[in-house]
Amino acid sequence: MSQPAATIYTGGPIYPQADGQAVDALAVRGGRVLAAGSVEEARAAAGADFLTHDLGGDTLLPGLTDAHVHVWKVGQLRTTLLDLRETQSAEEFAALVRARHQQLPPGEWLWGRGWNEARQGFIPDRALLDALAPGRPVLLTRTCAHIHAVSTRALEAAGIGPGTPAPPGGELDYAAGRLTETAYGLVYGAMPTPTQAQFEAWILAGLTYLKSLGLTAVTDPAVDAPLYAAYRALDAAGRLPIRVNLLYIRRPDGGSETLPLPEKYLSDRLRCDSVKFFLDGGLSGATAAVSVPYLGLTPPNHGVLRFGSADLYELACEAHVSGFHIGAHAIGDRALDQLLAVYARLNAEHPGGPRHRIEHFGLPSAQHLQQARALSVIAVPQPIFLHELRANYDRYIPPELAGQVFPLRAMFGAELDVAFSSDGPVVRELRPLAGVQAAVSEAYVPGMNVTLAQALGAYTHGGAVAHGDSHERGSLRPGFRADLTRLHADPFHTEVHLLSDLPVHGAILADHSISGAPVAESETT
Image (tube, rainbow, N blue to C red):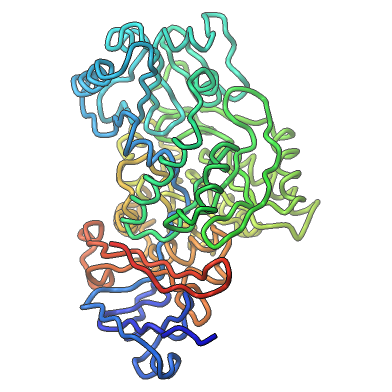
């Protein structure tokens, strides 16, 4: 069987390592890089049979990865869920909820997400939801997804009364109609179960949008059995538009039930060999587990630890010895103490296991960073939080901990593998270049801005490391996958404050078919 023609990309700067060192040409055949260098080198690698693709001045980078984004929830907000992330006042909030109530049939759940008290000036409660949507079950999730406001009818549907205890790792305020952390599962379990078709539609809506932002790969960091089935069905049908890595949840909200380890799965577009644990809450909503109480809360509040250390170790050990990577949500310094102690014990008692991740890594001390380096932990922070959630941090974080808020430069200084991400739809802004801009120019801790090359590297090579495929993706080396992000202009010659608005002209994925026969490179804009 004859080889397909190669494609040579030229006519614009090409950054094989996303580090500021440009080459003139990239040769690709059958979804793999042949050479990145001069035009002559590319032609020599391609041989006589090649097509030339003129970039017209556009820039090529290795395909960008968002290492932590809730894909189906992004799609749900773009299709069926009430989106409250833009509300700036009580009046806007009330108008949106009333309008949705009037649109829905009687008895149907009103489900929404995105309220933020630092932006709209108040925290919704049960009395307000009852007034805005009389007699209707309502569940409105804060933007962080760790705090939820519910109506009286929703509490009734869930069988929750004044004396109902909160599950371990959660808090329940019946009078206010407020659920924190694992208590969310009590109400979610009373809602109609989405069908697989609905999950598939939400996944596709999310992935299609994320690809339009220039992303070629993402990690969806909290997937259960129904979602896993939907992803596998889409992959079997060849419908996943970009590469997806899944973190399978072990302990769903609402109780002490533990899901069994999933079946491992690996294809060109879908990967599942990792599990997820939530150790604490969110920093912007003052539920992350901290050693110093948050500002302005009565009574004093140190956040929520969702696991006992012995329970966490038992579950983590089961996954570790079975060869599963662990992606553990740990933001507050108390949660980081707990998680790093568990990772250290795993390493000591069961050496040679897979590498593990820390999702968010929000308040690390210098000691935490040293421990993470010694354990080869992969850090997965969200620089866009520094832009979008700064007002929340100013409101809640005590001065004793303010110096530890997402110290990105220190993570690189500790020689960690760092993968940037958005955690969408926790934030409104999912463009990776907005995350780059925040990392380069909006550090919460003075002196903690990173370089442009470090930021882009965390969205390319770092993302591939976190994804588990840095041996063949994340840079444009010979033999690597030709996954590319095409930009309208050169980020290394763009003013920092303009980076987030730099237009994306395409996300390019190049694959082989299941039979092994190569298929042509494809580009979408």
